[in-house]
Every structure is written in C-alpha cells, then in structure tokens.
Length: 137
Image 1 (cartoon, rainbow, N blue to C red):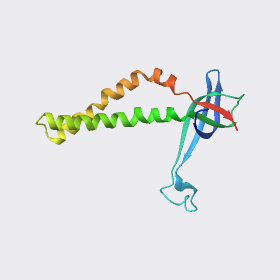
Image 2 (image 1 turned 120 degrees about the horizontal axis):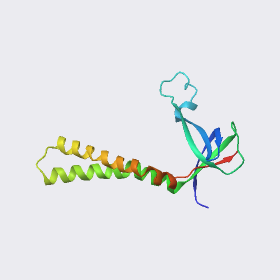
Image 3 (image 1 turned 90 degrees about the vertical axis):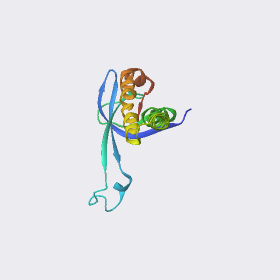
Image 4 (image 1 turned 135 degrees about the vertical axis):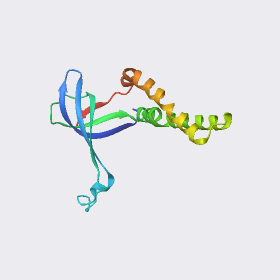
C-alpha cells in the first residue's frame, strides 16, 4: 500500500458526492504553555471535500487521507515549477537582452499570470487526480 498523508478532522456535511471535512491546523507553537498569550500561535481551519470509506454522518471524527505522491505533485505544480519558470526567465532575459534586472524580474513575475491561468483552466482535470478519502476514527 502506498504511503499516505493523513490529517484528523470532523465531518461538516454529507451529501451524495461525498463529505466535507473541517481540519484544524495549529502552528507548532500553539501547544506551548504560553500559546494563548503569544501572538505567534496560529490556528487555521481548512475544508476538504473527500470520498467516504465508511458510513459517515455530521460530527463524526475522521482521518482524511491522500497518497503522499499526490502531495509531492501538488507542491511541484504550485511552487517548484513556477519557481523554475521565474528563475529561468530572469536568467535568460538578463543574459540575452540589455534589460535591467528590475525589468527582467518584472517580466518573469508577469509570466506567472499565464501559468496560473492554465492551472485554473485545467482545474477540473487536476482536481480529479487529487482525491481525498475520509475514514472514521
């Protein structure tokens, strides 16, 4: 069985397409004794649509699972490829043209607009590849 990334959450709603799970992400420092008075303590709620592996109802505590390789693929699409695009464009524009570094950087950052538009255009196809599953704890 492939390695999984898992988080615990609570079922918010159930419908025929699947379940919506609320996951609370706490910063590492929030478990500290001074966490309640410290401004660095951070808490975020994420809502994830998942396919149920068990019979689930609202309020159930669940574990949300996704394959680890898909987590790496998400990081690649969202961060690594755009980083490579920007660095490559800055290097090419600086070397092949007489534009200054500021203009080369600006053009390289502007190239991210079409990149993320393409990602948005193929959102449904990408979403089908990233399937989350929820199992009862």
